[in-house]
Length: 195
Image 1 (cartoon, rainbow, N blue to C red):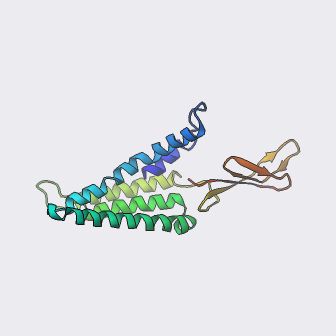
Image 2 (cartoon, rainbow, N blue to C red):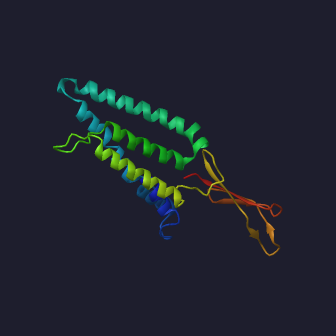
């Protein structure tokens, strides 16, 4: 969920105008994706440590864990790119993945406190906190998008704009900074890279 919150916080920030565009894009991408990538990158080594009981089988266990991880990454990439983005959109996918990871942590994590036998006390409190947090995010509109339609490659927005002194409204299709327009239509359609 940090991706959604960070992306909405940086949405209007263009970065210092003196920096080249590519450097600004790298800075924004790093700011948005570093923390979740770092945390998710710790899962495989932690899983290896928890699974490894005998050092003589370390190659076999590490190989199997990373093979399953790689196959899941490839499958997830194709599934998301060809199917899920066009059906759900990127924000719903990110929210769904974060909630799924949280639920898996609640189900399979070791949540026992020292000296207490209640395994479900901390997960129950965390689940309530997450449900309230997601409800607040939805209520405040932090998870909504400005897109009329989100495709695999673009976020399509429709805006009414008056162009020039004649009062004509023009449709614009913007992709990668190039804009085309005609003065005869009533709506402006913008297609920007999907984020």
